[in-house]
Image (cartoon, rainbow, N blue to C red; front, side):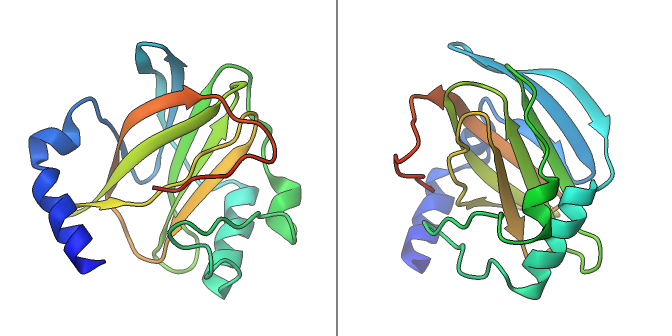
Length: 174
């Protein structure tokens, strides 16, 4: 694993890691439109945690999703956050990157309002240091959540594209 991280760090030079990347800071919401040419920003705004994000971050901080690491996916439906999950608006991607209430941790929620799944890559930034992180496909018409148990200043999201996907297909994480 360490060898892979070192190799990825060498391959992802600052120029390569940031090429065509969308940067989102903690405390920001970004709304996107995605087509065959890629993703484009429709709106940016400051944000505060929603009730869903408050409940979800409490569950994550409690350890409810500790096994959801790397390729392991966990559905947030068994407790409070699942009932509070927002419904994605049609033909939009809404990214919300927050500082979790309570512990100083980071959460990215992605509302996918398209009829295809969203795949992407992510590089997390703490201070001047950047490092790739694994993220999972966001199913069509669904909400995806990524949680990190530490503070992240910003994320660079790249290679954002919509792909065919149907219920029962695997949810790849890379």
